[in-house]
Length: 99
Image 1 (cartoon, rainbow, N blue to C red):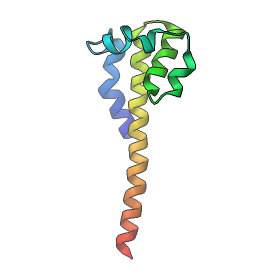
Image 2 (cartoon, helix red, strand yellow):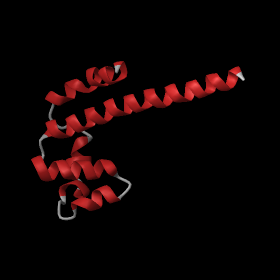
Image 3 (cartoon, rainbow, N blue to C red):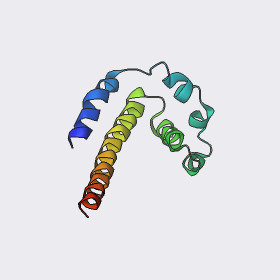
């Protein structure tokens, strides 16, 4: 939970910001995001991020808050996933050292 809070604290300021420099080519000028004709294909590819951004574009357009919120949630979920995987790995490693 603390790692998720850290992710929110670090990336939370982006919620009030407009698109950043790297957002323009990846989101605003990217046909994979802007072309909404074939929405499911974005999720079928290995580029889950572009599929999510395409879904955001279809639902709310080019509002930076929606993109920054999704990235913030991804960072928080990744922090939680890292915690649980590391905890599991360290528990297995610790128990194998005891044997």
